[in-house]
Amino acid sequence: YSETDKYEGWMVRGLVAEVTDPKIIAAIWTDDWDMYYYGGRDGGDFTLMAFVPEHIQYYHGLKVTSIDA
Image (cartoon, rainbow, N blue to C red; front, top):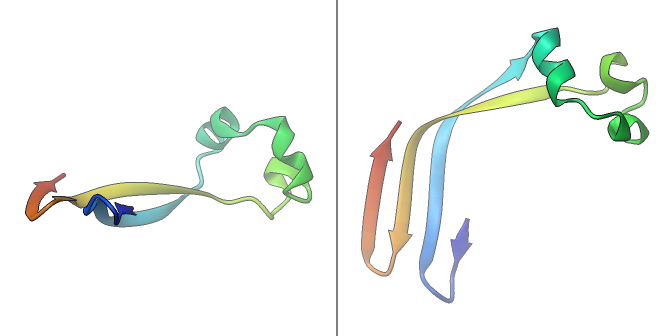
């Protein structure tokens, strides 16, 4: 993400993995999504992904701040 007019932005690097736990999927799922995913939550067209950040960099002006997760 960046705001080029302010020379400010974020870079986030990490791992993405598929969430397969039915309890987590059920907790996040909302029935309004049925119109977007044929067959609903369990119809095979919906996949939930988890992002785990490993490294973050924040840019502002000429300063860079790095954070390791």
